Amino acid sequence: KAGVTQTPRYLIKTRGQQVTLSCSPISGHRSVSWYQQTPGQGLQFLFEYFSETQRNKGNFPGRFSGRQFSNSRSEMNVSTLELGDSALYLCASSLKSVYTKDEQYFGPGTRLTVT
Amino acid sequence: SQQGEEDPQALSIQEGENATMNCSYKTSINNLQWYRQNSGRGLVHLILIRSNEREKHSGRLRVTLDTSKKSSSLLITASRAADTASYFCATDARVTGGGNKLTFGTGTQLKVEL
Image (cartoon, rainbow over all chains, first blue to last red; front, side):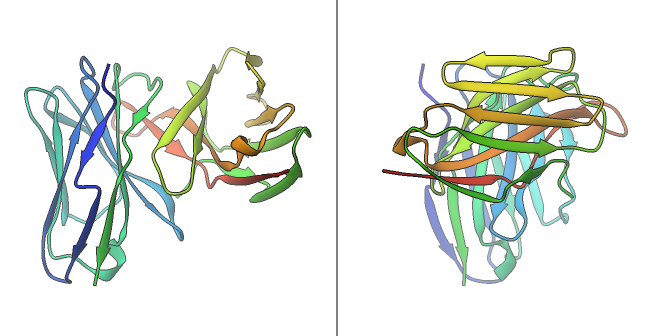
């Protein structure tokens, strides 16, 4: 089985711009979660999607949004980028959702740099 | 805020020695998981221990869970240079409004020297 893929792997954007990151989960996985990782804040949960519905959301401003398609692929969007949005964005997929969190399979991440 | 706090923040040992990392958390959990991350890459799942389990083994890994103390430990025996990485605990817990969320700890940076 192919692993979780994320595109692009690296991205440089300017303050005020917007960005869309993509994640393709492992075949058969319906749950996709997004995390932001920074040296200062560590791994922070952004949101989780299951069967095209957002199931949980972390404490991030409305500039961060996401969606999931019928084939379970997911995208996250950050509008009006700020310098503090520079981070490694990780996507993870799993079989289950909502009532229990089992093993998460992570992609390699997208390294976003905002200048 | 982080659910899990890990101790120590950094650990440096010689190849062949054992490495022990600890994780403390705050709320009731369904399960606790340990992950490894190599230098800015994706995380790799190591082991999952459920709230009704006390100890679990996987190869050179041994995980314990004490729900009364809200703590867990990860022991890596006979460490190798390839074990150099950051290790994170993650807790699966119910969130307000329904559903569960996986929350990651602050991580322990392990360096295994030859």
